[in-house]
Length: 69
Image 1: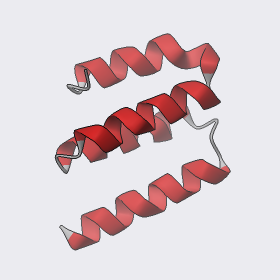
Image 2 (image 1 turned 45 degrees about the horizontal axis):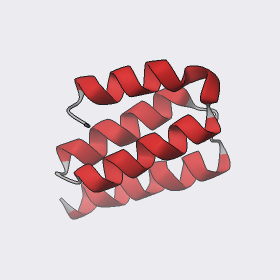
Image 3 (image 1 turned 180 degrees about the vertical axis):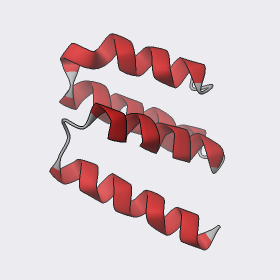
Image 4 (image 1 turned 90 degrees about the vertical axis):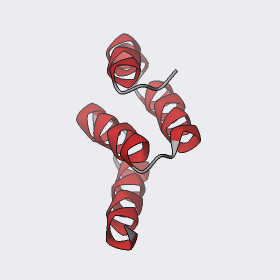
């Protein structure tokens, strides 16, 4: 689990520098949900929508499919 958390942290850091990566945001949301971190998944969704307003509907649909409410 520690290794997975480290990989997720690296992905999150990369998205801070390259916020236009919609697929990366979806991967981060999926990873957070897999780790049982729903609050962090929701925060990632909010950050993703803020960085990519044109993809907001897609991001929200993907997050909903992953169980983020």
